[in-house]
Picture 1: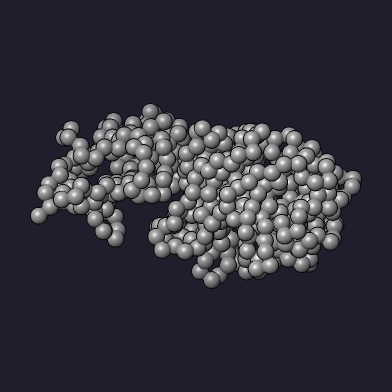
Picture 2 (picture 1 turned 120 degrees about the vertical axis):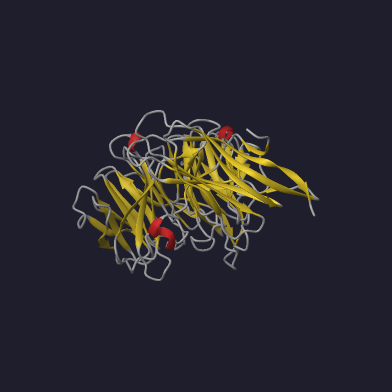
Length: 499
């Protein structure tokens, strides 16, 4: 092989979302990738299935809650139009009941065979043993403090807790207490989760009369005392979401949606990530309280905000990272660019885990909304089917600039890969490049079958530029679970003086 002037031989560091900064084992951006199954190599991850569009659900602007309930093995959705919906066996979204209470359904929680759903000032519940059209008490509890968020959570002590304004309500299946804890005035509870077995962690934002959060912190409460017991300061103006998993509390906070972690027993938050401003996108990025879930040692979250789904600068989508901060690496597992989802917006108000009998068959589901004016809903889900790698993954390298006074003369682009290990696979690879300020990608490899015995693809370029970016598209098998793994990208050529 000719001497390479650019060589990419490791991918395990994940994406940086910065096209010019990162380690040798990192890259700029991508989606649907798997760079952990075979460390150092790159392939496609599980496919995200586009489930059925239910024509026109015009009254529901968004779903703030999605849950898969154990009692009736059904997926429920709570909408902004006061309606409860459920997903049928064919994944169509069907209206079940209108609560006729004020405000959107702000969350869903299963507790002791009932589905609970808070709204502006009420909590409703539904007996899950009843038919989808029966068993409702829409005003089961009244008198909540009206607020934008009403987090609802079942804690390790087997009680259910609901945040409303500065107060925490509790329910132990016998006694409902509307103010089991009351924080100081102007504190609003955005999120509730456990912090180990000892504490309930309340994510509070401090609002002034202008309605803008000025500061934030996490209140730790032992669920017994009349006041909170300790606190964790987060150096941001607001908490957006948080989750506790595998001994770590993960917090999403601030306008740029920084990600912090606090080990159980600690009171110090460490910043692990901050989403950078992308191009001219002015909208603040959001992670909504119900859009964070833990599964199989990973944290999944939906990043919302930005422009339309067609803006390639936007990093919005569904992400995951390991629960263990010592292994932190960020991966965008889906960005909704494929097929008919190209016109869907970038807001993920809720994610859910669907369980089909055992942990190994859990999948993440989310809903997205049509941004073309006709409000439609589509459920998307991580595949659990046998042919789970049918989707397409996309990788973009950093931007490589020539040194001052030099240009890059490109002779060849070479991709090394590890073929599928069994016959019958049909994984394909596409390769692209961008030179200087090109508005679009130039495709040089189209649908190359990585099931062959070859381990190298070379393409003659013979072009000169000041900067270069590389891109790979990996298509999983449409017939089985086989995948091919890219193990290196090389650019051969030389540096030449600027004329």
